[in-house]
Structure formats: structure tokens, C-alpha cells
Length: 170
Length: 170
Length: 170
Image (cartoon, rainbow over all chains, first blue to last red; front, top):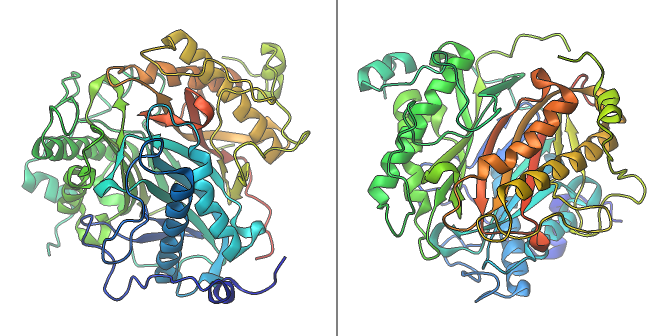
């Protein structure tokens, strides 16, 4: 058990969290919004295991050309990217109260049945950063036919913040 | 930038938004509910590119028998149908504050990796109607093995309303 | 129309709802959390048609080695398991106000297009227990490439509770 803050743990772990303010998030996949806040909930767009220049980590299909270890690493990178979205939304990871849910998609063959071992890569990273109490989230892992650009993994997450979103004019 | 209301834009665009009150929504896919309101959030059932008589637009599989342009058109129709659900829920599209999220499913071959170009058809339609500020939503696009009845696209959306749902007895 | 409570209906129906407190939920699929409460919303982890010892009901693929009737039965079992998660979260099923949404995944062949007939098994069970008014939920049914361990069905559900979650220290 550690008592350091998520931002401190990111530094301790030496994670390279992408900055989605510069260059601005978006473009590669169309007119998406990175996040939406509603009350205490923070909904995040799907994140893939790509660097900001578009290089994919272990693209392909689990059960054929991507191993479970590689898929785990890809899922971990997708979760690091998710941290960048959370920072963009909240300014700091320290405003996260809980990771509410992650719906994880893994590109697989028909015979591959270990998707949950792949998505564990994202879950473990989030627990390293936020601690088990805050980051252990509800989850479902689904084997997909395909993902955009050939990515092998995508995470679709919702987070609960410490405070509610400021009221916007409606 | 336009300042006309979403309902006015629907008229300007000449969109034929289905009326799910007559005949009532449901039946084809079982005991589904069209929408659920909880606080300011409006959750909507999955919508497919079908007319009310069940005719599907471009059924099939991206990468084999449906082109990206056809998939885009199908996604656009699914979003038009989604407008019908929102009207059923709120009475008017003008009560929408934001499109919060869409989880988009595209039926693809193993090799197809342009699902995001397909779901852009739905995103573009929503932006035409609600404007970019309100409609640019968090999104993930997933390549699916199959969808009901052979549809090539399905959108699962959540909307934030201008006001909270009336309290129901619980 | 019945006026008995959900807990009474579970007894009348003779459903064997698993107790996820003993042995504790988790382990088989990694570091997942069974549920998360946020305000009135209760988010639940994906549930599959498995007994607590890991025996799967009708594993395989719709359209090839699982019939629609078998898939329906599997979906029903997944929904019974979901009841166990709800009890773990709320103490009693009688605290459920509404089933908000279910996102249902069915493992299918490319040609199978009756996923909605499979997920109806879960929907019907929830309506038998909670009544149509409370349980008829927004839904999407997606044909998946694969699910963990070879399960043919998974349900990812959100429930609205009668009262808001107790405030936790943040």
C-alpha cells in the first residue's frame, strides 16, 4: 500500500503520459471529443495502444500474430494514454476518485478465449497509478472482429471524479 | 456556425425523422425499452439503419459487400433514427444539451480497419443537427462479428439533457 | 401483473441466485470489481453463463455449435448471476428501481443474425423478477468474435437504485 498521489506514482513509475493539449487531441479518428463530464462522472473516448505519432504497439490479432504478453503490453499502453485523457479533462490525475468501469475490446481469432488476460494489462497499470481501492473497476472484455487502423486493443472507460463538473450554461 | 435550434435544423436539412410513438417503438427486437432517463442523462437503445417497415440500408459486411461510403450512409441513417428516439424521450430535440457518448459497432471482415470512417456518418449527422459544441461526443468504434438481422451498423448512445428527469415514484 | 417484491419472485421462481460474498466474487477473470455505485446508478461487471465452480452453460458459437434455444438459456443464466451481483451491491433486489441498460454480447458465426433472440433470455428473466415496468431496459445486442473462456454470452448492465449511494470519503 502506498500513500503517494497518482501524479507522484506516475513519476515514480517513469510513465510517459501523452499530452493531448499539444498537439491537440483528435484528427486521426474524426470528430471525436476526448471526454465529457456530467456531474461526478467523466466519460472518455476509446483509447488504443498508439503513440501520438500513430505508431501502434503490437497491431494484429490475438491467437494468431499477437501473443498474450504482447497484448498485455498493448493494453498497458492504452491505459497510459487514458491517463493523458484524464489529465486533459481534470488537469491532474489526483482528482480521480474511482475508475468506474472499463469496457475492453481485444481483436482475436475465433479460438482465442483469454481476452481477460490481455485487458489485465490496462487494469494493472491503473491500479499501479491509482491504487487498488480507487482503480479496481467493473469490467467486461469482449473479443472483437476488428479495431480501427489494426489496433489489437481498445479501452472505453468511465471515471468518477472527486468533485462534480462546473455547471455549464445549457 | 448556425444559431438555429436542432428542430429547425432538422427541417432545414429535410431529415425524415421516424415517429416512434406511432406505431409504437418495439416489437422487432423483443422487449426493449427505447430510452431511460436518470437525472440529466438519457440512455438510448441501440439504433440500426432501418426504416420503420424493417428495410435495412446496406446490410452486410464492410470490407466485403458494403463500401465505406455505403457504411457511412447507413451510420447516418442510424443517427437519424436516434433523433426519433430522442424526440420520443424528450418531446423535442431542443432539450438536448450534449451528446455524451456513442459506442458504434460496424460489421467487418478481419482485414477491414476503417470502422471509424463508417461511424463518422453518424457523428457528422449529429453535428449537423445539434452543432459541434453539443454533438461532438466521446466515441469508440468496434468491428463486430454480426448484428441483428444483418445490419452493418449499430449506435449505442447516451445524451445529456438540459434539465433533469422528473422524479418518479420509486 | 404481480405485486410481490423481486425477492419474493426469486423465491416463487425457485431461482438459484449465486452468493458472491462466499466465496468472494472474483479471481477467475483478474482484478475486477463486481460493482460500482455512483449516485443512484449501479454499474455491474460483465456476467457470463457460468456456475460458481466455473462450469459454462452452452459454451461455443451461435450459428455453429450453440442453438438459439441454448443461447437463450445461457443468457437467462447470466441474468440470474447478475441478480447475485445486485444483491452483493445492495443487500436486496428490492432496492432496484429500474434496469437502465444492458449491452449484450453473443458469440456468433458471420452468418448468424438472431443475436436479439439470444439476449431476450436475459431480458425475460429480469422482467420475471422485477416486472416489466422496472426491468424493460434499453439494450443493444452485438455479435462478438469471442468471449473469455469460450462463453457464448455476456451481459454488461447498469441499474438505477431506489436511493443514492451513501457518500464515501473522497
